[in-house]
Amino acid sequence: MNIPPVSIAAARVALVEQYADPVLRRRATMLWGTRGVGKSSVVRQVAARFEVPLVDLRLTSIEPVDIRGAIYADDVQAKTVWFPPEFPPTPADPEGILLLDELTAADQRLQISAYSLILDRRVGNYTLPDGWMVVVAGNASFHGAVSHDMGTALADRMFHFNVQASIDAFLQHALAQGFAPVVMAYLKLRPDRLDDTASQLANDYLVGTSPRFWEDVPSVLRSGLSEPAKRLFVQGRESAPPTPQSSSACFARSRPAWTWGACSRPRGVAERGAVTGRIAR
Image 1 (tube, rainbow, N blue to C red):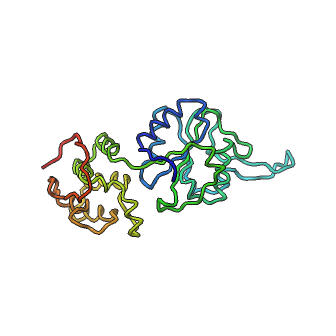
Image 2 (image 1 turned 90 degrees about the horizontal axis):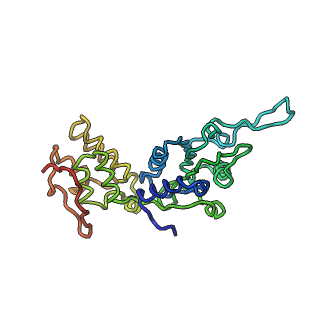
Image 3 (image 1 turned 120 degrees about the vertical axis):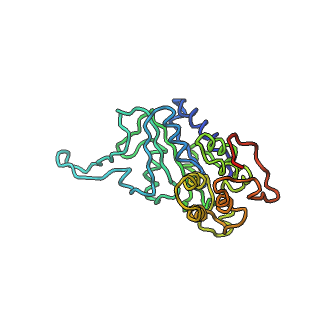
């Protein structure tokens, strides 16, 4: 992909500034990125920042008729007309964000209807209000997800962000959200484990670590599950078999304290800067 990578934090700032500009708001933006990197959540954050409604359409779970509407016979007009769906924003909501998620994985018939909203801000007889911004999200084929090629005509009508996981940004997010210190300490020691999509694909693993995985781990550690059960739940989301360096092995040894010597850092993997917060020793 010939789009420079950006962190999810940088993408959020850019989307905030785009929405604040009435002219740029009318041009759609495409968020490319692997699973769990935070594409959908960052759009929700922007909508919350401006206190505007968000319409979130998961294109893989709807049919073309859900965007275009259903056709029916109007006896009064003596012709067939389109009966619009319920999701499109109305003049009652003059501003907001329309998220077309999983565009590249959607059925190509559905993509055609979505293209009309992206390119012309209209579909059938419906026109999207001027104050609404369209954000599109999806995966590329090299992300290991189901993906259909995007034509140059559509790509040329959008801004594009190649969103990638950033350990520094994620650690700040983890600190703000009150993640367990053991999780932040592990990622500080093993930043290569924040997102191992490349290793997952290279080894043909079904699952792998991602920012979404690390969002789930604190919930497992805080739960009332037994230590063996916690280890199994964490193991079930990791791509590699358990090793002394895997997170499931490190967390299982915490009980609940954790020591820096519990997990070793592989050669070539640099430790990140300090993370504010108490780490039990």
